Image 1 (cartoon, rainbow, N blue to C red):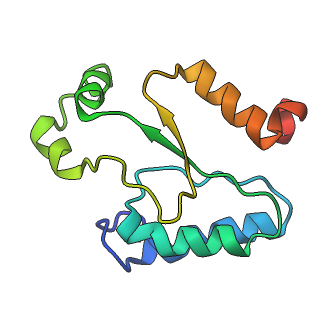
Image 2: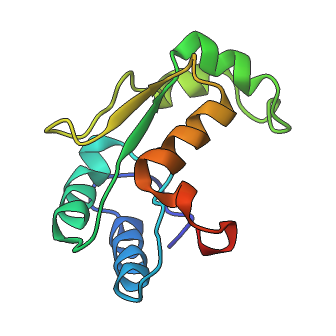
Length: 131
């Protein structure tokens, strides 16, 4: 099931929802992260955020395609797939409806992006072992 092709209505979408809800219901902080196309995952993510009793934050890392290619070239799997495949996967500003996400631009460094998320979510005030 976890190796299933990414498509609308796929079983992995319900699995992500179930695991996130399970952890949230037990008091854990949850990060749902990945390339989650709005038309595939949007309904699930929107419902998950709306139905969560606690604070919810959503972030979108906006990296233009040219920068995506540059970053990909530095990865260990750079030779496994390239520009042609990535062009088919890439969706510019594939945001959820309703402006749910805070967009973080590619000019934000890793450290600045992590710091921003920790500050805005309140996790910066917690000991690291509680994230």
